[in-house]
Image (cartoon, rainbow, N blue to C red; front, side, top):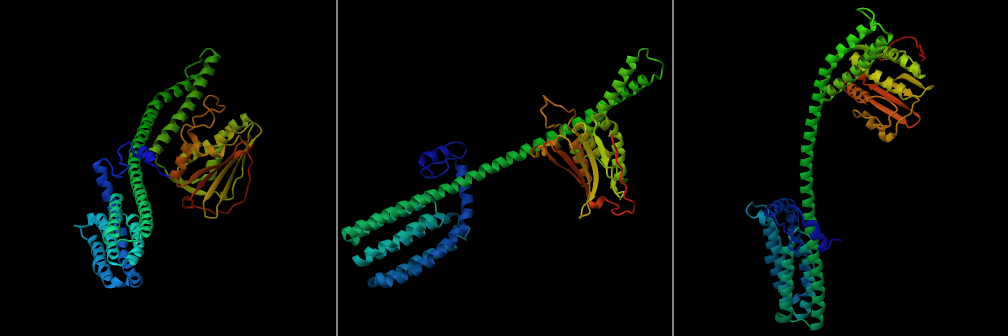
Length: 481
């Protein structure tokens, strides 16, 4: 529950400083904005409340017949000819542009009028009837403070005025027996206090909602600005990487070319065998560095939306086969067995052969790299019921925690700590492959458990597949490394 101390602490700082007694914002512009927004939300409720009040006030005329028959005529004049028309006019005024901004104080005046009408009946009735009709003020208090969204200060002022009027009438104008008066005043003061407190809490809650919405809007604006800055920074990064990749590839090609000349001794023997070995190492390292630079260039193009597909009809089975031949020697060196279950269908699809080969090369290399000696990597095809084609690469390697699967698709990420890596790599393969597959309207997903291996599923949409049911014999080839 809110206490005055907590309220002061909550609203005592920042641009939304608030007076905890009047519940007004100390900054005039903030108060003006709040009033405008509050009025817009309150108008439908105020109109409904005023219309309902006419009906309720009229229905209570039935009670006049039994409680105060001696002044029935006067009571009905007050009720039907004075108070009900006031409520009706007030409800109509909320539709006029001139009076619409004053809908809340007008509602408070209506409640004051209705309470004053009850007190007028008490003043005219005999002491017994007047003593009974005090109860009519209780729903007035509740209505004033809780039903229409009347401002806390307005509701409090109306309630206090009615209490004072009742006190004057029942002690001077039409005195009520003391014990009855004391009992009535006790109940009225308690009802008034609870109604005022309820009004305070309601307006406090409305102002708190306003503050939360303003702060949320400000945070949303800040988030949009930060997102734009991040997007601009990412774009700049991609452009920088693309430029640097181009600049690095030119001298690197020269290094690779000259190392090949030295390795092949095209202009005569080098003299010592070590020079030839060193030139081979230079060539291998250069080729490795060139592949990394190519990955960076392709990834930066993909992130910048500049990676364009060179599409043609390709056999996805042939691409998988040719890629397996590239990594076969590497798998043999690591003692990893490769198994390819060749499908019946050739599966001709529309795509970029170079980029698709890069996708499978990355996936096969990862599968071999993270599989221990004696393990296996199996490749198979599956045509789904919706017509999409899946290529599955299943390994018996180290696996990945479920919580880390999404991380491996972020650039330059490896799950292992950078201080204790057991596996070399830039972490560009999966992000680049994901981007390439998205350009082909497809996807890559991983199904993995730590220590149990990983299944990489490459899915092509049916719209890109030219043939799904070619005739042929179901042959199974097993490539061993």
